[in-house]
Image 1 (cartoon, rainbow, N blue to C red):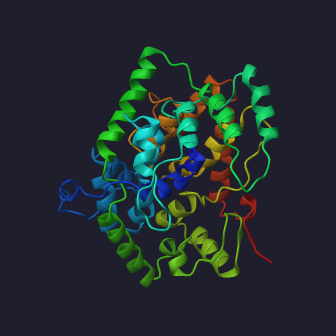
Image 2 (image 1 turned 60 degrees about the vertical axis):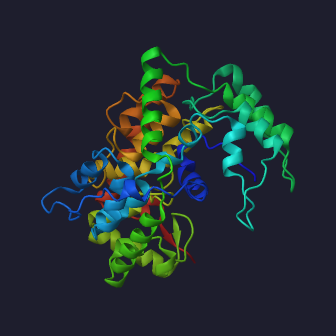
Length: 373
């Protein structure tokens, strides 16, 4: 099984899908603790609804409650609520590369366990992937990074020697942490391990979520149809849409309901337009992936249709991947990381303001959203 290190927030959804097939699903007694009162607070603001679930102290239970709630806004958020469970630092916690890869290596055709590739074990030992990373490479590593990236050649067969060199380079990208910063990061990882271990993406949740979404689709709820292939969505990407999909996005923007806006700004298909990259320098590729992966969530929080506090899923993923766990919210965390690594933190606010302005003006053109011709 080909297993690659997952090191950026932009890859969270891919990691979640891949890892969810390998997580134990045998803890119904934990999920049976779900509160009997699944009805959302009718007077709470959208952000308060999701914040209350995040603050419950059990994100897996909270995700199941969201899936069962029947509330379109909570259902729009449900798939994103446990993304941090699939960070390598979480599901590899306390395991060697060999132990971890033995656990997740399966035959794709049969689903049966198979021995992990020894070369993959060596690559993952070189890059343990369990600590926060810089988003800007130190100057002394930039030339090496450029050399390795230019040396990559398209091939049907993996170049294990080249991948091993890249893994060793990335291991040098780890953030130097103070004792207090290390303690806060360790606490964040251990909290996630305690919540997620053997429970994330259970069959119980997936069944409840699909049933909830199907009910909303049957009632013609726009947010449930957005990006939903089972409901007829056919487009790929987040800027060029087929005619029917474009009209659905246009309707979500025009109606401006919290669930529709949250869905447009959530997940890997966040509709945020093209990010200005004129500030990028050599060695800062990780920074643009970090920003791309979190921009939709930060805009949703600015618009009051999500929560970006320390209990939120996006904050916890970013904290685990990049540090800044002591910051008050996701935008502050990204600003802190940019400034820490020698980048301009004003980039974060410029991008948030650009997208917020486009949403407030209901301006799809400003986001580069077009009909496919």
